[in-house]
Every structure is written in C-alpha cells, then in structure tokens.
Length: 587
Image (tube, rainbow, N blue to C red):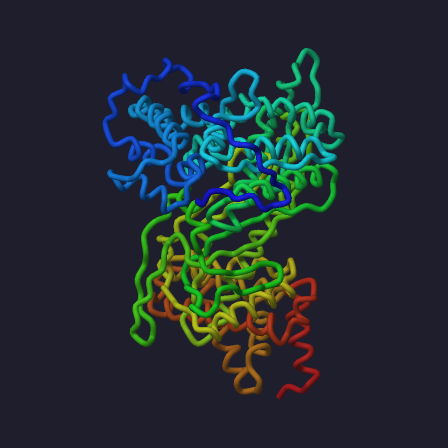
C-alpha cells in the first residue's frame, strides 16, 4: 500500500515527531525493555519485519511505497535510509526479534502498535509513521462528537488494522483489545451515552459502570444477542473496514474513514426506524461471464466477475478446488467451486432493542423477512439462467458463499455451502447473448414473481441442481406443475390439460401433449405411493421430460403469460387457461 498523501478534505497534516526523542512503550506488554545489542536476530531484520507485519503495514509505518518495501526486504546491500527511518526499522526489528516464537504474535503487535504512552493521545504506530515523515489523516471537528472521536480512533489504529489478518477468527478480539485500551475509546463511549439514538443500545442498569453498559438486540441480518458499549467502537470500525473492502481490495485511510462514517449513520437510522440497508455479496459458481461483460445491472442487484475484493471472504470458508469441462466447440472451461460470479445486492437493516436477552427467543426468527428476500433474489438469478438457455441441458448456477455486513457484529457474517455435491454442475463460459438473456430473465422473474409460485421456483431449482435420483427429480418437477395449475379436484386432468393449453397451439398438439403429461403424472403417483417394479428406464426418461416441461411452463408464465401470475392460486390459473381455451373454440 502506498504511503498516504494528504489531499482529502477530511485530512490535515500533523508535524512529524522524532522517534528517538519520543517516549513510547518500549516493548509489547509482558516483555522486558528491549536492548538491540542484547538481541540475537535469527534472520535478517527486514525479513523478520516483513514476515511479522506484511508489506502494507511495513510500508505505512515507514512511509515507503510498495516497491521500496520490496527493496528493503530483498536487497541485503541497500543504502541506508535517513536517521529517523533507520531508527524506526531498528525499533521494529527489536520487537520482531523478541516475538519470533510468540504464539499470540498478532495480539502482541496490535497491543503495542495501538498503545499510547502516559499523557499521549497518539498510538505507537502513529508516532512511528510520523517519525518517518508520514502524514496522518485527522477527521476535522464536526458537530457530532460520536463521529469525530470514532473516526479519529480508526485513523490512529490504522496500522493495527493493517497488521491483523482479517481472515483470522481472532481478528475481532485482537482489534477489540486495541480499541478498548485506547484513550479515544473513552471519549467515544461518553459521546455515545450522550447521543439520543445510540444510547438506546445500552440501557443503564443499577450499580453498573458506564463502560460496562450493554443491551440486547435482534437484527434483520439474522444476528442478535448482547451489545457491549466497550466493544461498540471496535465493531463499527471493523464494519467500516469491511464496507471499504467491498469497494476496493486495498483499503486506504480515506476509504476506511468513509466506511466508518457510513456504518455509524446506518446504525443510527436503524435504531430510529428510518430506512437503512446493508450490503450483501453472494458468490455464484457454474458459469463464467464473457470477457466483454464486467457488469450485468439487474436494477435490484448486480452481477460481476469475482475479483480480489472477494478473495478475503473466500478465505474465511473451506471452499477450494476447480471443475473442468468443455464447451460445444471443444474449448476447456474451468470454474472455481468458490465462484466466478458475484451477486451484489442489499438487505434492509432493522434493529430491535430488548431490555432482556430472554425476550429475543420469543421473536426469533419471525422478523427475518429481509433475509428471506435475499434468498428470493438468489432464486430469481438461478432460475433466470435456467430459462435463458432453453436449447441446452439445464444450466446450473449455485450459490457458494454469502457475506453480510452487520455494524453491531464483531465480524463480517460469512456463510457458505459446498457445491461439489451438485452432479449436474457443468462449467460454462457464457456468450454475450446468453449473459444478456440471463439478465433479462432474472429481471422478469423479479418483477412478476408472486408468492403463490415460490414453491414452483424452489422445486424447479431442487429438481435441476439438488436431486440425485430420478424419482426425486420427477416428484419435484411435478410439484412445479401442481403449484402452477393444481386444484382441489381432478388434479391430474386439470394440471395436464392446463399445461397442454399453455404449451401447445393446435388441437392435435394439445391432445398429444395432454396424454403424455397425464402418463408422466401417473408414473409420479405410482412412485409416490410406493408401487413396485417401476420401469427404471421409463422413470429416467419421464424425469428428464418433466423437468423440460416445467422449464417450458415457467418460460411461458414469466414471458408471454404474466397475467397468470396475478391470479391467487393454481386453480384460478388452470381455469383461466381452460375456460379461455374453450371460449376461443376447441374441437
């Protein structure tokens, strides 16, 4: 990461301080004062620093560009830097040598870099950077003391964030330790308790000190539980970091500050009952977008190729491996099980504050409609690809991981499922026309989807992607028929005839298709009712045909016959087809 240069209206330049004359905590907590002469360094000091801190943190602390850090590490005969930078390298090398065998190395580094000496309001990391001529961003005074103190805290602990690996499950606790020990966190807590909205998160209990205050909340992200005032700064800054990371792989001080401010505004809005949304990212595997397509804008969501921004999320999962296939032209196509396409969307963010954690159980999970809406968006996209390619075998897209930012959570919420069990997954590189069709069908499904056909959509996806046995595929595909056109009476005749009217245009074709649909329906009934000696060849053939018919029917209802989706039940839809057909004349 490049050294930060001051040009933002949020920044001001502070004078550099001489590291050699600045009082600092000499070593991580629990260690004796360090003496360079008494330390036997086991490897080149610069290499040890790079191993411990990484290029980004090392470049920030020493105010070096990335190529300069690489030169520092790789060139044993490098020319010496100026006196202050050499003093900083020596100081950092001393700490690194002392921590070579430390199990909790990251915690020690974060506590040391984030610590402030007696009477000092700036961290060791900030002082080291200033001593090397680096500028320090500083939030300008605002009318809101909560935002001012929180952004100042985030800026001062920026070096700590660069050192800690966010994929490490201990990240939240390590950074929380650094924030809680910082004097700015105390100012932030005081400002929160004076804020008419944020204070609702932390109701007062008799005999409780202010920093011990906590509350309980249920959020539309699917998370809930206790919220501690002592950890509030850490969770909002971490969420701001995640928010910035969704926009760019490398987070700068400016993007971090912007993310923190947005997350704080988000919490305030949700507590006050004002509209608020949090970003959601979902990995999709099965297809690769054309090289010419960097974005498919669906209006309510976006589809884009996976990139470096998503890798840090993938590393929090166990998703790995690739699947190879071949196109119709013989070209090799390789997809990643972690996903080659990312769905970008949003989730409505709501917070319910409860005085007693026990009351959360009585509401869970009734208030999670927002999460269900996200599931439906994924279903729309997955069905969209099925309807977009009618001439090929069903084209499967599977959701692999999902990441949701929750400002009240200590870490980014990441869930995942392994797609390797999907036997029908076929690596496919989409052509431009196919990508456009995918976007078009996904929009139609979203625009016209009605609650009454949700079962049909889910069962269609299960039949094509989740089921392994032909009898299960057949049953799910027929459920699609029933959900679309079933009724309480004469189900077989009603459904098979309605489908025939929907999918055929002449009397002979309708008659032939109705007979075939009825036969497939009868086979499904035999399977469900446990009939012995079902012909496996006929079962396999019928299952494939039932899937094709279901897809054909869904293309019609989401294409030319969206009027059917406005009807309240399958019975109404089938009657509209049958009565409409007879009134037009039926031989």
